Image (tube, rainbow, N blue to C red; front, side):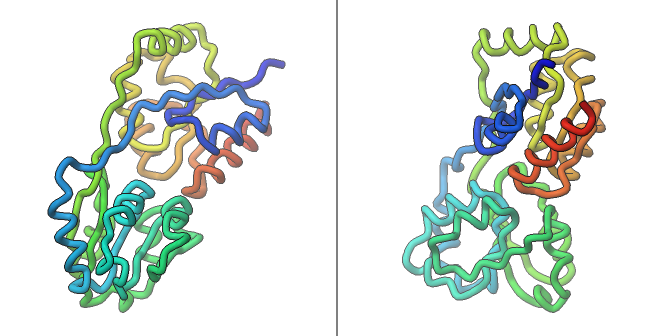
Length: 248
């Protein structure tokens, strides 16, 4: 029996390695990437005055990496809590002295906020370090109980595919040679649709990570067969491998 072919809308990393180890053929197609905003002066000013905040929210590895890289001595002495979402974000703080707060069971920003009692945030002031495509769920959930300032430190951009790569993927789609497609963000879905607009490109069995991405995929007409129960890429890969093995 031929190996199931999985198109992963992401650069090659542990997720793809796990799928390969479980006997799948993986095609990586990183349609989006991130980059720091051109002007970080406003963020640098926030870092110099972090003591005005009771805590920070950092929900992505990219935001965490920029925060840690830009933090000066005063920021490194920040006494408040740093609330992080996701294993990869938490890992960024592994060798720091920040008071990191993390919930292993929370897969979304909403689950994370609701995992605390109301008094955890009531009457306090926070800084949310985020990207330009953030859903801003934290700010919305805390708008009646806390002050949440936001600072955008990175933006999501569309990668330009060379004609050879684009043509090769399109031909495989047309020939029905791709069995599954995996999405990690709504932005990845939108960029995929812009490149491959056809019924064949959307009808493929689809696996996603997170309810927000699942909602966008369903709205776009994708055949969503699996929503990862956990937010980590490793758990997503293991869940997908088990799912495909059980239905083959």
